[in-house]
Structures are given as C-alpha cells and as structure tokens.
Amino acid sequence: MHEGTIIWMILFAAFALLFFGIAAVVSVRGISDIKDLLSETEEENSHE
Amino acid sequence: MNFTLLDWSIMVIYLGATIYIGLWVRKYVENLQGYIVAGRKIKVSLGIATFTATELGTVTFVYFGELGYVTGFSAFIIGILALMAYTFVGRTGFIIEKLREYGMMTIPEFYQLRFNRQVRIVGGFILFLGGVLNMGIFLKFDGIFLSEVMGFGEQAVGFIMAFMLIVVMSYTILGGMFSVVITDFMQYVVLSIAMLVTTIFVLLEVDLTMISTAVETEYGEGGFNPVINPRFGWSFIIWILVTNVASASLWQPGTSKALSSKSPKVAKQVFWVTGLTFAGRAMIPMFWGVAALAYFGTGESTTAAMPRLLGEIVPIGFLGLLVAGLLAASMSTYSSYVLAWSSVLTLDVISSLKPGGYSEKTTIWITRWISGAIGLFLLVFGLWYQIPETAFQYIFITGTMYTAGALGAVTAGLYWKKANSVGAFSALVLGAVIPLGFLVLESYADQLPGWLSFVTNVNVAGMLSFLLSTLGMILGSLFTQQLYPAKTINQKEAAHA
Image (cartoon, rainbow over all chains, first blue to last red; front, side, top):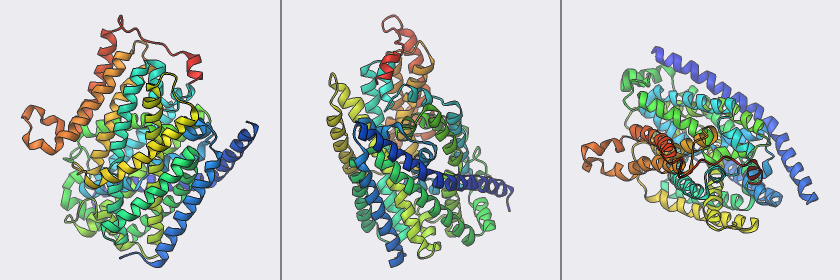
C-alpha cells in the first residue's frame, strides 16, 4: 500500500472519530439546551 | 430502483416529524429578535448542532465526494484547512466576538455602525447576491445525489426535492430561527447516524488496498500530495485557507449562529468545537468519493460516481436512513440559508432604504415573502444553470464574491482606526468584481484575449479578489481621510442596534 494512503487514512480515522465523538456528546447535551431555550422563551413571553 | 417500502417508511416518518416540530415551535416567535436570532438564547451544544447541520448539506456531500473522486487523497487537505480556519476563529473570537458584543443581527448591520448607511446597502446587496447564487445549485446537486442513491430518474427526484423545498420553506417562513435551530438539531442527529453507518458500509465493501492502487494508478503522486496535484497547488491552498477564515467569521448563515448565541463566550465555544469537526465533515464524503474511484474506475460522471456507489452498497433499510440523513442535511442547510439571505435583503437593503425603517411586524412580513421568492428562484435557477468546472469551485467562487470584500471591510472596520466608508465601499466592490467576471466569462474562456485569461482560472480569480479588496480598503481609506474621516463606533448606537 502507498505510504500516502497510510498517512491520509490515519488522519481520516482520527478526524472521523472526532466528528462522531462530538456528535454523540452534542446529541445528548443538545436536548437539555432545547428545553432551556423553549422554557426561557415561554417565561419571557408570558411576562410581556 | 434501490428504494423499498421500508426505506420509504423511514423517510416519510422522518419528514412528518420534521414538519410537525418545525411548525409547532413557531408559537415561540413574538418579535423580530426571536425570528432572526432566536432571542439570542442558544447554548453551546445546540449551537454546535445547528452550525454543523447548516454547513452540511447534500450539496456538501456532492462536491466533496466529487473532489475525492477526481483528485484522490489530495482533496483531504481541504478538510484540514477548514479545521485550521474555524478553530482559529473559535479560539481568537476573530470578528465574531466583536459582532456579537455589538449586538448585530446581520453582518452588513455593522457597516452602518462603523461606516455609513450606503455601505450597508451595497454590502447587503452583494452579500445577498453572492449568497443566493451560491445556493442556486444546491437543488440541482441534491437531485443528482438522490436520483443515484434511490435509483430513480432525475425527474421523479426533482419532484421530491420540490416537495422538500416547500416543506422547508413553510416552517422557515413561519417559525424563523426557532424552527431552524430545533429542526437543525434533529437533522444533525439523523445525519450523524447516517454518515456513521454509510462509512462503515464503505469500509466493509471497498478494500483499502484497492483504493490505494486506484489513486496511484489514476493520479500518481498528485493523488496523495496536494501541492503537486494539478487542480490544487500552493495558490489553491492559500486561497482556500483565506476563504475559510473569511467564511468562518463572515458567512451569514454560519455567523448568524454566533450572533444567536447566549453570549460572545458561547459564540467562541460553538466555533471552536464545530471547527474541530470540520476536517471530518470534509474527509468523510471525500473518502466515499475515493472509494467510488476504486469501485468504478474513472469512467463515471464525476458528480454521480459517489452517490451511485452508496446506492449499490448500502443495504435496504439503511438506505432509507441514508436518504433521511441526506434530506436532513439539505433541509437544515436550506432553512438557515434562506433565513439568512432573506434577513439580509430585508434588514440591510429594503429597510435601510426607508428612513426610519419598517415596524417589526412589517419587517417579519417582508422577510417571509422574500424567503418564498428565494425558494422559487432556487427551483428555476437550478434547472437551467450550467456549473463551471467542479461544484466545489462554483461554491467557493460565489462565496468569495462576498467574503473577499467583507473580510477587508469588517476586519479593517474592527481593527484599523483609519478605515473609512470609501475604503469599505472599494473593498466590497473590488472583492465582488473578479468572481462575478469568472462566472460570466468562464463559458467564453476560448474567445478571451490572452491578458484576460486569468479571470477564468478559478484559483487565480479567488486569490485576486482578496488582494484587490485589501488594496481597495487600504488605499481607499488612506487617500480620502480628509474628505471622509473615519467614524468611530458609538457604543450607545451599538447597544441599540
């Protein structure tokens, strides 16, 4: 196998893992962010 | 036809859920700030999801996949350049932190704060033009991708895409940024799962040794080294790096996510973490494209090869998930882009032309109508326009039309005391001229005199627009200091912007 393939595939693996790792964390934490966004907005709108 | 009842069911359930949620959250929109920037309440994780989803459309998969197919592993350098640019903006807060501090909703709004109303109108119009042209080919490429993956003819898929556009327009027009960020989040989750599953199938079905041999046979060393690849080279690398810094800080659909953040600190965090994902965002579809090269050889249509590969190797059920992911990618991109460009035209051009502007209610009403008009334009433009060279180059040159001038105008406006309205005006116009020349003249490259041929070289045209814009800002400002003294930012005016 060409050594260029090995280098690029190592980088690909590292960055793909980073992409999917961040996606996993954000998918879980994002739900509470949505809850906060909607509840804060609802509260603010009811005061106006 | 690759699509089965199970795949259809997954896709229909997904579309139904998106429409329901997108329309349901419209009740939270009560004023202009809520409509354009979701009341500036977006926290880090939601910000990352919406930002990534915005910057990952089906068209992104098409142009990155195409680059992998036509240049081999060399294309991967683009992912690394994007990572460098976006993490730089995230770490330093370059431009975005100040714009968020000043409470801007759109970038041209800053031109009025720092220069004058005329610069805002011109800047807003160029941003709108570059942005809508940039978006003009999305639907066409989505059609190509989906027709290959699903195994339909392009006409049937054109109908599906038109339907999808209507769905997106309906919730974007009604719910503004609230609908955009919440549907973006759903779309981000579905898209990430679809990308993971597809990558696993590509790795299982296409042998790495076969990929390596195909790249070496077809492209030689240029398939591994971007500096010697004839499509790239140093001028391309520098241009893409500069464009990425400009896009990261100044591309309204992305920057609007910083401007919607809860604070300047949150805006920086969103850009920093999202930046870390940008190498993967580019390399994953590029890898699928390189795999298509190994699987089919070079005889395929460059845009269709990668989606055709996915249509062949992704099994029933997972194909429905992949298409749902692709629709998710397109919908999140369309919604953010349409909202961004309609906001710019409404706030920075139409409202700025009327002394005193319009009421919030009328402004939202105008934004909604412009969003509808942009949707109509996308359908018409996508059908007849012939794309020059590769899709990637079209996307970057139309982006440069605006970002080249904006980088000069906003950077100097924020960090150089002598920057004045003449410099800003020159930067914006000079930054747009060469990319516009490229788009018009590229089809007539053979008939042009030799001295003008540089305009039809996309890498040279891209670099030149940044250089001219910088020169325009520096010389324009220095030569007119006495007639047009530089304006300083009024903090009170910024607070009330």
